[in-house]
Image (cartoon, rainbow, N blue to C red; front, side, top):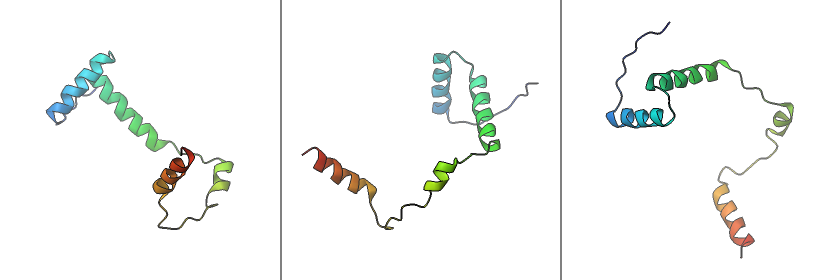
Length: 81
């Protein structure tokens, strides 16, 4: 059973959403309903962690000040010299 819902949304968001819905050949109502259904289903599903991933958890201890972006940048600079 469908029920009417009133929302207050920024005008530019609505305009963009209408364009998106038209491009994907769905109604704006269906688009919003699908999004809300996806939110509900994500919250109800328990994420399962595989034994392999769990075994890798906590294997590496990094310095709290470790800057992985700088380290990776330095690696790429050295690699492509």
